Every structure is written in structure tokens, then in C-alpha cells.
Length: 465
Image 1: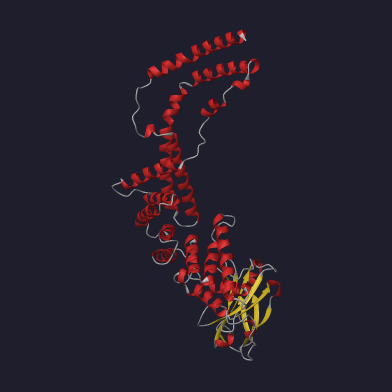
Image 2 (image 1 turned 90 degrees about the horizontal axis):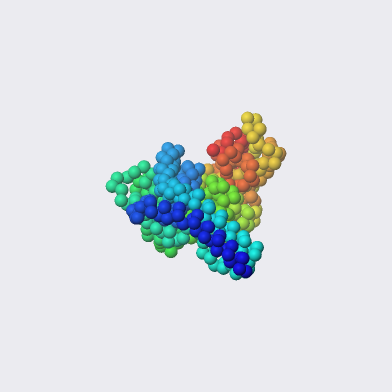
């Protein structure tokens, strides 16, 4: 034991002789005080700022992918964000250079105590080590606390509000501030930030949709009123904007227009990554709406039949007037409401309430269709709702197809061929098998025909844009 203590004392003295003089020299040459400012910014605060800047970059790239911003706006905003990142890195560089001057002394000061610790572990009692000391020296986890995030957000707000004139990228800065406030559930501040962003970019559908979302949160998650006005405005600018379509679907669901909600959500689903959380949320919402639609229909039309009618009616969603209140979505809702009065195929066909003819595929498009692709043949009123009055499902392998459409193929007794004197027959080839038209589908349409017409020649000769 005596030998151990002598060796430990000798090693301790040697360690102190090596470590203390360099540290004392550094202390004597260092300035006695550091000015408070960017150079004195806490590492955690810098990490918070960098985290927010990374989020802004990711959001900016997502908006470019969704065509919410132009490439020029994206390039300008990205340059501004990268400049801010460089500013943060420059602030952190000073302390790193100061620390490198002591690296040699710290290495020596670490190795010698470790050697002494090795002797103690080999010759002494390791159980006597106090783990609390090691835990106290443990490095921080690197996670940004809510307080640090709030501090970074407040700094960004002060910077934006302190500018005497708008600067390039300010709209994205206000948008990022709005998203940060919304994440912290500070919805009044989020709404004000989005308002400043919209004032700079009034034609940005993403900003309009984000503002509508925040305003809905302020009025108990209700989209009626100003939120719906902003949603309609966003869809007038971009009829296929995913978030605006999703919010319009939620508004339709609030009004118990379940078919219209599914039509809008289905369209939004086409413009988001299939494996994204957004897509999963849309799928869940559509399942809920279809369940509610089935309960509303009761014993009438099956959900599958209602889906087909809703999807055909939804072909114009996002392309006619205001998608949130379009005639297409309204027609889908009407189809389900009318379906309560009877079931599909329940009405007998009147002798003259039929159409017949033949569908062919244009040779120029033959290479774009596979034998297993689905072919929908349907009739719609020439002047009336877009919901199909009769629908027939086949495959490309069956082409050319001789068809007959009559009242037995109606979706409901109130929406059938015999109720309309003039109809239009159309056909569409779908690779997905989905009744909702999609870009790339092949389609064709005949001229309006009277009930009882035969020999209708329908050629599929166009591509869905």
C-alpha cells in the first residue's frame, strides 16, 4: 500500500508540472473579458439556429418539388440561407482556433492521469471510483431544448422586424418563422408571420394554405370562413396544390360531403410521395370518409359503386372554378345523397333508354396500352352533372368492344339514362385501374347522342394531360 501511495503521489506531481504551467501561461495571455455578442453565443444557441436553417432548407426544397416556388425564388432563398449558415459557422470558428492552441497541453494532461488511473485499476480498488464524476464530465446530448428553440425564434423575429426595407428571401424567412410558431402552438404569432409573408408573396399557394391551417387552429379546427377563402384562393393559383386540396377535403368532410372529401383527398394523394406521412394521413382520412359515406348510404349503393361515381365526378376537381366548391365535387356528393333512395342496378331498363356502339383504340396509342389495363366505358349527361349515368368496365384485351349502356347500369334510380334526352359516351384506359382520371390515361369521347342511338363509334385517341 505504501508503494502505491508513493507512486500515485509521484505521478500526480509529474502531471501537475506538465499541465499547470501551460494552462497558467494561456490564462495570463488571454483577454480578461469577452464582449457580449455573436462571438459569445452559446454553442446550444448556435445549434438551434443551424437546426432551424436546416429545416428551412428542407422546406424550401420541398416547396420547389411541389412547384410552390419558382427556380429563381428557390435559388435566391437558398443563397440567403447558405449565407446565414456560413455566418453561424464563422462565429463558431473563433473558439475552435483558441482551443487548438491548448491541444498539446490537454493531450499530455489527459494521458498522464489515464496512466495513473491504469495503475490504480491494476493495483488498487476499482470499486472505489466515483461514477458521478464521470457523468458530470459527460458531453451534452446535442438536443435543442424548447427554451433554446424559442430563443432562436425570437432572434429571427427581431431580425426580420428590425429591417427597414424588405430584403431578398424575407418571405421565406417570415414563412419559416410562421412554421416555427405553429410548431410551438403559438398560433396568433404564426398567423401574423404568415400574413407578413403573404404580403410579400400574395400568389404563393403554400403560404395561403399554411395561413388557412393556422387560422383554423385559432377557431377550434374549423375551416369555415376566412380559412376556406384562403384555400379557394390557393387552389385558384394551383389547382393541384396538395395541402390546399387536403384542407379543402377536410372542409368538405366538416360539411358531411364525404364523396367530395374523398375526391379532393384522392387528387391530393397523387401529388405527394407514396411513402410519406402526408400520404398515410390522406389514406386514413379517405378510409374514414368512405366509412361515413357507407353509413350515410345505408342499404343502397355499395361503397365501391359510390366510389366509381364519385371518382368520375371528381375528374374536374382542381380544373374547374374553385376546387373546394367545384361542380365536380358537388356532383360526387349528390351521387351519394341520391344513392340513399335505391341500389345499383335496381331499376329495369326502359326499352329506349339504351345506347350501343363500339369502342376501338387508335393505332397510334396501341403501344401505350397493356392488355391488362382497365377500360371504363361510361355515359354522362350532355348538359348536367358529370356523374356517370351508366358505366361499364372491361380490359384492353377485350378491344374492340361492342357495348350497350342502359338504365340497369345506373348508379342510382334518380341518375340514369332515361332521365336525360341527350348524353355523351366516353371511354378511358387506366393503368392503375382507378376510376379517378390520372395523367397519362388514354381517353376518347363521342359526340352527343340521343337515347336509343346505336352504332356509336368511339375511338380512344387522346392522352389525359
